[in-house]
Length: 196
Image 1 (cartoon, rainbow, N blue to C red):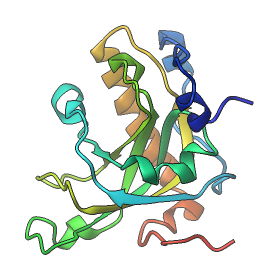
Image 2 (image 1 turned 60 degrees about the vertical axis):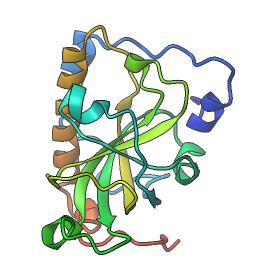
Image 3 (image 1 turned 90 degrees about the horizontal axis):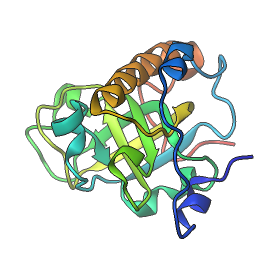
Image 4 (image 1 turned 90 degrees about the vertical axis):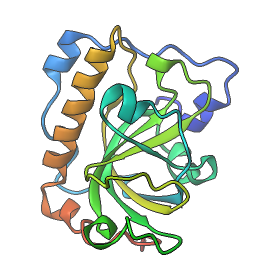
């Protein structure tokens, strides 16, 4: 069994991530997971959106919202690093005229949880890309996430362009994987706690 993200984070040095290859990309499927979320999913995470490195939107065309370190435990203690899919919702902590109407809905998301080997991060992070154009950032507001499945392992890349190609495919895989009844049921409301 591979080490959990928490176990990897506690090591003095990060093990190198596998290098993405063209053969890996060509072997990827358009739908992942079973017809229903498989254990340990679904996993609920929430927290106040933190400032990250600002690379997602600027470098990669994929803006992300970072969850605080303390909100990672439900996921990092039972899964390894990688890219995951599910739904996310932003809930304003204060009245914010930019976050009204459709911006308050639950939207599909992809999430990278790991060390971003292309950028050589030292700390574990969870970066959520919500597939909706908010037109503004939402630092300091609450974000709820329900993670429903695993897309792929965390990889290293020889170029930014190769990373962008995989991110684009991750988004397509997430949308197709969520297009099943057992996953769609989370598209209207993210529970605070899951019933056993």
